[in-house]
Image (cartoon, rainbow, N blue to C red; front, side, top):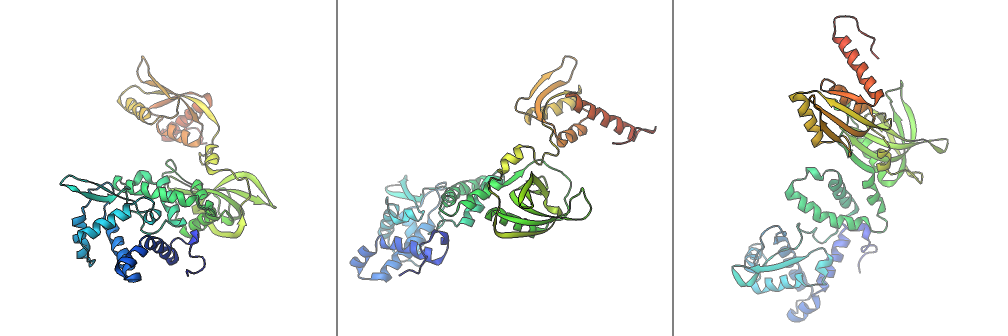
Length: 402
């Protein structure tokens, strides 16, 4: 009798679960083999071992299949004594509908063999080989989901097909009872392309891991933080909402608790400024915290957003100005962006954008090629910048810097 708890979903990778899978597959043909050979358990184990080795030899669906003769030869080379007819029978039974092999995630198919009208070429039906006799654990599924969500653009095409196949198994695990925390965790992680380009101070990996564990468990944290705006360090009790990697920096998005209640709405904390982190184990975050994506959509980490504005820019006539406009055609500033050529040369660009410090920095860097026409406040800010910059590099004493 199997030990208590062996069939628990929460212990998928334990030896108990592997034995359970083996038993289910073995029972599918144990009685018949025992009756035919009289070998009982030994015969069943021998057949099962051979079939596991057979499944491991099959390629995925993106590669040419293998015939029974070639499979029999390779099995004999590995020490499994068998003939072609035995391999054909094994393949037929593994491929049969509604058997325990399918429950174990193994789905094979035999396609016509152009070189042998009576034979078949066998392979896995899916784009990747299955996780043998197991479903991914919750941790496995979390890793697959995060990779697919945040780093899929960096995955080579050959590995993308494998990732897509594992995603399906990972998605099923995320919907198991008691595993919703893993499904929620992926909603709390984002990597944003834009951000400061300077190199950040050293980051304590232990702090990052502790925060991520708190995000996974929906737990509060105590943080000691060295803000740039004040001398010394401050201690906070935080309710984590999410973690964001923007540019080269990691940011914790969290709600601060004071006197037993949340204050100030979501705030951002740069992880390289965190001096100490301690999880409040089994102390859950407050109910009703906003979703990370909603916080980001509200302007967090956009460096002092001041709402949306109708931006109007005019480019300098000439090759350099035209090249810059070509860049904005490829990467628009806004969904409603419009660009039109001007009779006197150059172009005019119109778009609805968020008025942020990052926008100002970008326009300052391109001030020699772009003129801000609207909005007036932004135009004045860029005009003052140009005046201060000219004075700073001029011979005469210029205006005081801001």
